[in-house]
Image (cartoon, rainbow, N blue to C red; front, side, top):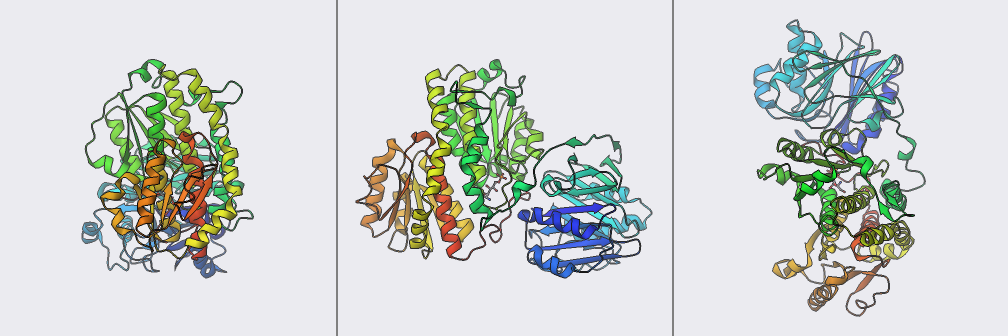
Length: 615
Ligand code: AGP
């Protein structure tokens, strides 16, 4: 969950490192640090808090350094503090290490390989001790890294520098705790946890695989296996746009990203949904051998895995797969899935949903599926991410950079991708009627306008946010497709505003949660689903009878809740199967409105990181 960067070349390292770190701050932001090297000196500067604290400390320091490493931290071992910030050093100050992930046996390693006193509570510091021990014993830097890889258990990646070899960086990656990507340019090399940090500096990248070591000098990058065997790797060329990541005139990235959703939907449907023929086509994105018509007919089960918001998108996708592709579908939380010894075979299609493509639990679930020979599709927003390398096929979300920690547009992009995939699979399996395909494509193409309408209601939603912003507890209820919407509404509210919010299936309400209802516990009831509408009405009446306030989220033109709900939140009336999309957008605005009123750090909520690369 931490972000790591490194640079060696002709330019001023501190500026480049800071700039790259600012692009990785979404991975962690409780402390940061940098190690800068000149021919004669290594200086390490660390600060608690956000990156701006480090910037202040760095002003005027080591401006002549042409190499260095940097880190932005999300604490796992040791509280956020200056002493626990990275880089971590050996006791003699010769080497410095920045690290992401967890060294599981760090306590044992401290006993065995400590070179003196430890000055932090981190699992990282022992890596610096091990490195210097190796160098003192006459090993080369790469050999010393090999020693670490043979002893340190866990999933991690790290970068290190040796003050006696000031233009050289070494790094390694073990398992799936976040990658290491090396950007190649003439006379300089830059490396980071992910490609987004490198975009202004390079368009050619080498992605380090698990159990690989990288040895980086300004104009030479060498890759080795953990046994020290040299590997030949050609850089991949990616053209990505750093400019779209800017906040523009919006107060927060979250608000900007909410407002981008009509375009996100268009980008997600472009080239897949045809407005002229009203047909769907994803054939160019699916591996033809793995997903031939014959193979797809053989599939007898689908499993969608994901975490958090991506799992909620998956729960909506389950309805689509069962309805349009007629495949029995389960959704699993990736973290639970991997530990329950799931029954899988090559007739189970595994679909992973992950905007980052780096979520450690989702990667582990995919590895489990790979071992069982399951065909796999991943939905990801990150070109070159780990899941895209593991899956047989990738459906890119095309949502553009999502900087706010809370997922908004990537969820909507995941839902539309699952809708398209379900229609396409149904068609390939010969189970989707052409008129259903036509109607669904037609309805989906109305979504960008529907979401724009929700955004036009921002003032109304904001008034509701104002009214309820003092509440400290919230219940979100929904049935059918409204259930994952309720879960997502609750998750968004708690992560950005720190309000305690529970999402429940409305049918579950009487089995416990109703005990919570009183005049201090408002409920947001998702009432857009026609087939469960009457049941939601009953739920609302039961809550009102117990003194609870209810905001009913209803489709435009539905006045049936006016008399019983305390307030209504109106979204455009669209095909019920697609209604989660505008409903989720309305709830994003509601959470944003409450969070800003409570003064929360909307884009970087406390304790969270955008990409969860540790268990
Ligand atoms: C959503 O707002 C959260 N930040 C979180 O639940 C997120 O959806 C989850 O960590 C999964 O991330 P992924 O899509 O990158 O796999």
